[in-house]
Length: 414
Image (cartoon, rainbow, N blue to C red; front, side):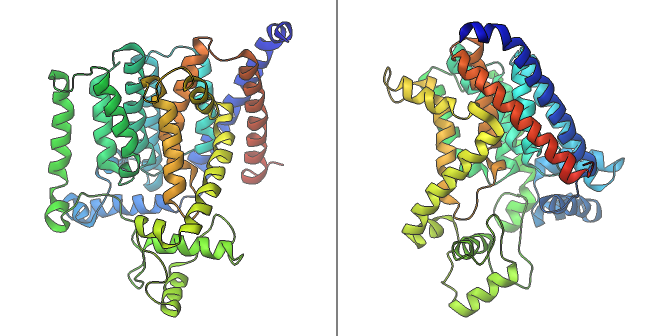
């Protein structure tokens, strides 16, 4: 087998690189220039227009994602609407690539091919939402913690904590990722990282800057300003109630999977069945029906793994294998398990708190770091060559399927 691997490895690797790059370029072109805009993109476009019409103070009082609006606002002066949001995220992607190449000094091309495949499947760096900014900050922080554990030195503490602060002020979803952040702080502390030093001055100034920017929202609403996906003013239901009803209807076969009832349908359900017939909030949803919570946890974990393998191939499975192998040799809280633990933790948290369907984009931060983790051990030749080769073949097949899907379904060339 090894002789066959040595003979054909370069050829398979070349096909892997070409197929992924082609898939990435088609996905990039389609999402940036051809894809119809809507959903969350409409929310951020409306926020951008609101700033131009009513000013920053009124917009912050209304609730916006301040870091993302600061990033996208300059582009809106010379680019139209949605495109200004998309270009801002493309710039952010370029900065992330520069970070990996210049700061982390990842020079091998295989890492970027893995990353390009993932970007081709997720596409949120080419769309007009704040996902890219939020997750980039987390990616930088978690990556820096990983390299501190590996090398006893961060590549850039300033970028690590600045990225964390930007993520904190970008989306409330930060709270869901907070267990991973706290785990990172724990491993930094246990491994001797010095938090109070001159390098922390810039992150501190950045924190104070965003707190000052949030002052209109703090004064009016008593909370930080985040993008606000409010229901129509004619309804009195919440997102969590709408999502819970979605899963109830899916389980009854009255609604297709991966879809939601309308706000009006949710309102009508509450009128018929009573105001307490749907839980309101994450904790209420988890404790409303324990049997459903447990069932949906395993279902969502399965879907997370299924879509995760579609986006990462065997890269997703390697951290699980890594935990299994190393727990036999070391303590449970060994720092080398930080990234695998973070992956399993986020998969479990989302599977537990989300009663309706999982959106793969919620895993962007930890999936990109999983690529960093996998590539690190591949470079150290600590991954079996058969595992690597099979992964190449999987990516080739997935890339071919993705290319066909774009051409056939979206560009109508077939």
